[in-house]
Image 1 (cartoon, rainbow, N blue to C red):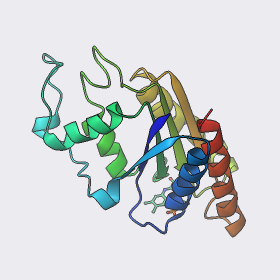
Image 2: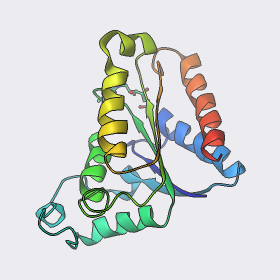
Image 3: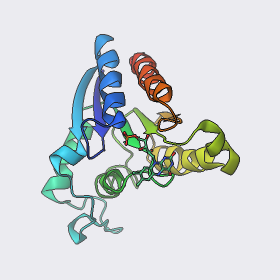
Image 4: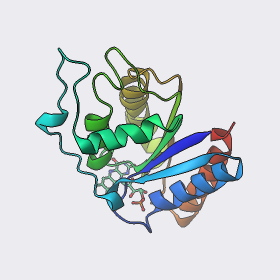
Length: 189
Ligand SMILES: Cc1cc2nc3c(=O)[nH]c(=O)nc-3n(C[C@H](O)[C@H](O)[C@H](O)COP(=O)(O)O)c2cc1C
């Protein structure tokens, strides 16, 4: 299987990057061919432009060069995994903008669906599981991202995982990396 690994964090020494690397290492060991999309390093611009705004009357609208480059990365991989830090119970702005601009009308939704069978979302969460449960944040994120984005775009094999409590202890960060290893193995199945 060929898979696009999209990571969004400004620091390569972040826990988010460590989780992404561990996931990639373990998926690769199981035979998955990983293509990296490191949005911060690549300087992806998340701000929507008129060129990339959908034209509801024209599902075959030709989007900008930058967006068509990203669409090609999705097209040449049958699966993706998006690894990100949870910021304000959601995606960081750059990853949100990548979805806004690239998962576009006529490509990911409308008369077509995202040309991938599997997309997994892995959020690195600072707060613990009980803090998420107390206010329904995990469910809210799952509804927004797994249902509202992945299901809406016709992705058949969806998964939304939060790696909790990563700023609460050094142990929790190590647990998150170990979990990434297990997820990488499962992703390959
Ligand atoms: C701007 C910002 C917003 C954050 N918001 C949340 C949040 O809503 N929920 C949460 O669990 N953690 C939140 N955090 C903590 C991150 O998820 C935390 O940094 C995470 O462990 C990722 O580690 P890393 O930054 O080393 O990759 C936030 C951090 C930042 C910088």
